[in-house]
Length: 363
Ligand SMILES: C[S@@+](CC[C@H](N)C(=O)[O-])C[C@H]1O[C@@H](n2cnc3c(N)ncnc32)[C@H](O)[C@@H]1O
Image: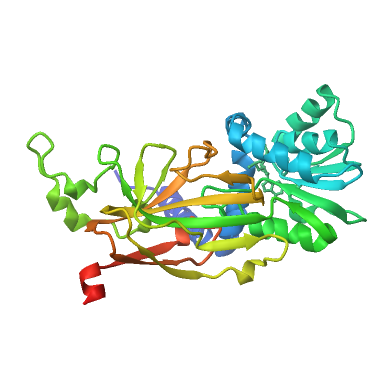
């Protein structure tokens, strides 16, 4: 059957139209401007901005708050610090008030006014809790501290911005910003003295998780070939633990590797590389480095997250920076290097530990 000229014309036109539509669709799909319209490029966030969002979400969770409130060593440390050092009539900023508990301690201590600042939605609970507990002179400010302003500087900045790695809750930039803008000259930061430790240690054998390639006989199954796939990413070598039984002993005499006084420190004065040695006094296996912190208010008022301290505040984890296992003897020297790009970002930490045998040292 032959097609009429009208039918041929209709087919010709519809083919052209279909082709034109395909081309137009392709053009539109390739158009950067249109893509930008429908899928606006997400704002590139700096690591600090990403952490700020994480922190805001994390502390909105009641579980995060109750773990801190249930930590008796932490609570006693702060209660003592506030009753000893906040004076009646003081004006106080509570940076990161959470449930408002430290602001309430300060208020009960006779503070004239407390500004309780928190960027997380937990602050809504803090307001209610204060009202229900008869706390009246606390202003709750639902804002990140960097956007908090006052006409008159205050006498005290109170804070608990202590991370497992000490610096990983952005304590230094947050406190320094408020100190430089809103603390009276000679004003008090509570707490202000911090020490970071990074100690070579032996793990308890039954608690140590071996590297997967060290498992040569799991019911007759051998994983040693996994060493060929040994991860290069340092994330694999960094563990967090709250297990108090995990660290058997420190190999040397513990000493702080970084000391901070928040009254005087600036972020840029923190060293980005720390090198130190430990003389081995307890022989054993070098399994890695354990990172923990101490905060000090007075000589008899210390908060610790050391895994070997019976009075440690239990809700803080400590960090284990794994090393390939090696045996060390009394008198051997361990040379540790810790390099960071940003103290508040544990992902930027890199570490090495060299062992100098005492035989070679004395030779
Ligand atoms: C470790 S919790 C301490 C909570 C409370 N002060 C306590 O001791 O129970 C830290 C709190 O600070 C808040 N926070 C952290 N950085 C902040 C900032 N720069 N500005 C405002 N709030 C902040 C978090 O949302 C969180 O509630």
